[in-house]
Each structure stands twice: as structure tokens, then as C-alpha cells.
Length: 608
Image (cartoon, rainbow, N blue to C red; front, side):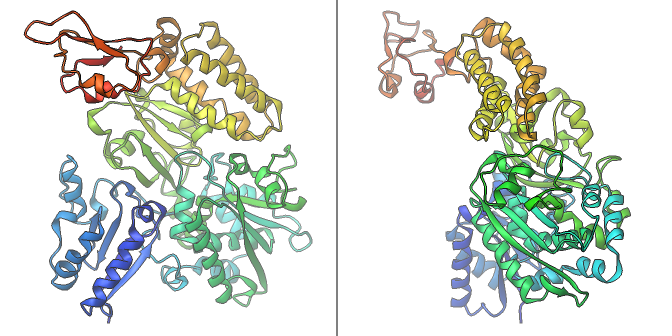
């Protein structure tokens, strides 16, 4: 008889930190003590709090262990699982306190600062069930929504329910999901149709879709079957990055299990409805996240966007009507069908219903995956859920929407996060990447980082994107190298507008957004780079120099030993109270590696 369940995070983040080996070690220890029949180990998807992985939760107590190592396993088994004594030094609040954070007094995980403001809908099963077990998914009401649709609702009623829910596409554009389904719903049974899932998550720092596929793949399968029933399709494709091996493997296992249970294939639930699906692997091209390029790739061609109209709902995959949604959008569908429109619309804002999953990264204490109701402010996400900026630094900006998005400055930290509010300030929701930056980040350099990514990933089909983004990057390089002119700012703004208006696809049209946003909110940093030839954050090497304060320098010579360029030498000056000559740095030789600063215990070397 099972008396305890030990849930271990098996998502990519914790797996890379050794969680699978932890699971194997735990199984060995339990077997050695004869406890393997009493305690069940469950390898789950992502719990969300990636900063504290590997994570282990013991039920029924709900004890949350974090940063667990192989050496901790014998103690957890002998103390907690055998004797019932919690290993206090490993529990979540103790770990957080050890990091200099205020110790939590919450009695349960749901009451901790990271989790208590979250509302898990798309992530509801991640970290809760074994994603490789269809029985566990069914035990969590899995496939009940599909049965309800097939047995109790007409296709048009399904579409109307999705329309009434106000669910908007979570892939970045925010287009109403029900409206997309409605456009593709005509001529059911007379025209071959497809449903497709966009799991080609290409934004730097984004891992929302990957985590859902790793932690709850059956939710996506069920939702795609519902979409197929609604529009009259019988075939589906999931386009997923080949760089997501855990997600791909678990999705294939789930598809095979669904077929075995008769939930994919012919005559599902004995209703005469037929639907099956396949996985297509992408090679990591960012442009294949654009819907028409994705479909072109599924068809076996080079992933390039196609002109729209016609839109995919009219002429999509293999030139047939197609519904394409991303992973997170689909993950909401079964819950909307089961719980009803009123339940879903009770969350979020007037025009942005439900929740949104964010991959929280960058200069933030609690990096990880969070799901909050639309309308939650950026301050709540960063200061409460995210635990604030580490090392006492000040929040400067947050980049939303990846290379296609913009930045939210500190002055707008109380902005409610939803589609319309972000658009109003010149940003966009995007797929859900949320990169936090502090005072040490240079916003000109940030714009260059994202633009470099876009230039590298441009498919090259249209001139505005292929050439325009490269010219834009050249101007940024010119400014960062110290050769910028004030006229360059006007040139960049003009070029940004041209690229936005003339590019073929949405990725090209949004490529200038990081430049537009940083020019809008951090123009003074551009001016400092151009006029003062200084980088205020001390990031751009061409505009930075290291200086030794001759009054503080004791002449110990450690920086001389650390310098790889022989750029440091003795001077004739001996500061009052010191015995050895002060040192100086030859700017013409300095490679600006920072080794001298890191090695100086007296704070005598600084950036200028």
C-alpha cells in the first residue's frame, strides 16, 4: 500500500541539474530499506521555481525540498520517509532564508510569495502528475472535455463557447481564438482541414510551451482534438523544436497512449468522430514560429513566410483551411469547456481574459515559470512573485515579447500586464518571455543583442527585413563603438518605420521594436553614447576605461599579475601612508577584461 508520494521535477531545468539521477538514487535507497512498496516516486514536469532546482515534494505532507543533491537523498530517506522527521535545512523557506531572503511563515506551498498570487490554468498539471501516464491525466479530469464536446455539444456550440470565453492567442498576436476557429469552420465534411500546434518556441529566455509539453502533453492533444471537432478536421500536426528532446519524447508517448485508449484515431468515444495527429520537428529557425513559415516547413519546404491574405483559416497547411494555435492557447481549452465561460472570464481584464504564463528570467531572484491572471502588475510579478532584484540593485526595465517585443521602464512598473495595456505603451505581450534588467544593463546594448538575434534569424525572403535590420544593426554598432552622431537617431527611427511597414511577415514587422522602445524610454543613454562617448552602465567596452585611484592604491602588484595584456605598471607617486608606488593602467594596451578590478581588495580600480 502506498503511504507517500515523492514528486521530483523532471523538467529540462531540473533534469540538467541532475534530478533524474536523484530519482534513481532515491529508488535505490528506498529499495535498500524495504520502503519501495510503500513510497512511490513520480517524475513530473516543471514546478515553476527553477531558481531552486532540483525540487522534490513529499506528499501527503506537502514538504517542498529545494536544491536537493545526491548526498541529501540518504538523509531524506532515513529521516523523513522512514522516521517521519522533516529535513528542515532543505525545505523551501529555509533555502530562501539561507539566500538572504526573509524567512517565509507560510504553512503551505500555495501560501508562499512565489505561488500565492499565481493562478495555474495552463500549468495546472505541471509538477502534479506523471506526464508519461495517461491514467494520471484522466484522474485529473483529462479527456472529459473532449467527451463533453463530442457527446453533448455541436461544433458550433464549441466554437461559441471559445468565443464567449474571450480567450486570445497566447503566441504573441492575441487574436481571438474562437474567431480563428469560426473562420475555418465552414464546409465541414466537404473540405479537407487541419489543426496544427505551434511549439516552435524561439524567443531567447522563453520556455513556457516547452514546460507544458514536458509536464502535461495530454492537455494539448485533447485540445487539438476539440479544435478538430469544432472545425471539421481529422488530422493534426504539432510543430516542435528538435532542441526540446524531453518535450518531444513525452509528447510522442502521450500520442501513443491516446491512440491505445481510443482517444485518437477512428470513432472516438463511439461518436463517429475521427482524428489523429503527428509530430514534426523543427530545426530551430526563429522564422518558423511565424504561422505561414511553420506550415511551409511542415510541408517539407524551406521555412519562409507567405503573403497574407489568404489567411491560414482559408488556405493554410497543404493549401487547405487550417487552425493554428500555440501550446499555451490549447492548454486553456479543456478547462474552458469543463468549467464554463463564467469561470474563465472571472479571471483577467475586460479585453484580456484568463491567465498568462511567463518565463521569468534575467536579473531576478526567483527565475522560473509563473502563471498569473491578466491584469497583474509588473511590480507584483517582479517584487512579490519574482522576489525582487538580487544584490540590492535597482530595477531598470523588463523586456517582454523577446526580439519582437519592447521594454517596460521602471517608471511604468505598475502597468497591469495584458494585451492592450502593453500595446498602449509601445510594447507587446509576445509569447511570454519576461527578461528583467537592473541598473547594470545598458539599454543600447540590449537593443543590439535582440537585433543581432533577428538579423541572424531572418529568412531573407523580403528586403526590408533582410537588409533593413542589418543597416539598423550597423548604426547601433557605430554608436556603441563611440563613432555615433546625433543624426543616427533620426536615421534609426526612419529605418524602423520602414521595416515595420514593409516587411512581409509579423517577425520582420516587429523586429525594430527593441530599438523603438529603448529610443522612446532610454533616449538619454543613446545621447550619452554619442555626445559624451560614455556608456552610463559601463557595459560597452569601446566607451569604457579602467582607472586606478592613486590615493587608494597600495602598490601591491596583484593587478599586474592578473592583467593578461601587461597594461599595468608602476608610477613614481607614493600615496600618503603607503610605502610602495601607486600603479597605473595604459589605456592603449588595456583589453578591458576586468581582471584587475576583480582582484583588487582595496577598491582602488574603477570603471570610468
